[in-house]
Length: 263
Image 1 (cartoon, rainbow, N blue to C red):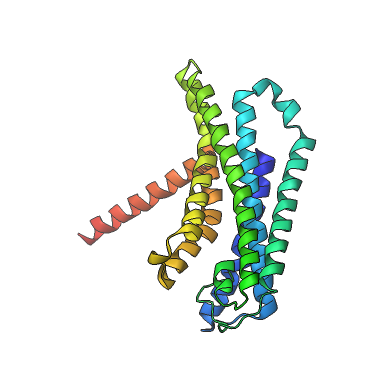
Image 2 (cartoon, rainbow, N blue to C red):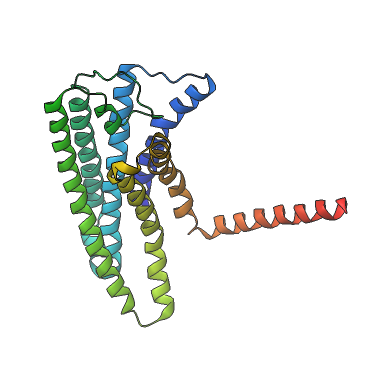
């Protein structure tokens, strides 16, 4: 799990570095421009990191399944070489997915202006600027293929967690069940946050679409999950929890002293 967490951290860092620095620069300099090549690079890297993250989360689900349902076979099924191969497959699939969509999206002629109405380059907003009906259908087909692959991963995740919960509920001791659930909870929280925001962002009904809502949803699935992932997984670290508890106690005590001195 530590090896996969390292890879997940890299995808989180990549997602943040692809969108946030440019958005902060534009905000500080009161501008909303990005070059054509810069937009293409931003879309490619964002799609690359976000796709790789989803595949890594799927692999991490398999890791939890083997650890809980087949613990005696863990060393055989998930040795260092197997982990490296699965991580490499996740990165390679994300790369090919991003390359395919970026090449097709930026091969389309744009005739509806050049204003995206978004804080980073995103495929649905670029497609709105296109005047090529065939290119739009081709990209829609690519999106359907990617969505089918993502749905297959989702079915695998659901099946794995059904088996995990069945195995955990058969554990006789309450302490054992709690320990097993605690190893799955961070992954489940991260996965739920990632999927719920991304699915709603892309599959929401057109009737409720608005620039403000689109912006809020884009921030939710592109910035919030990568920013929260390290915190969610770190909360299993007892030393970190003790440090946070001590910091909050110190802040609370300081606030009480200030109130008392003011009185």
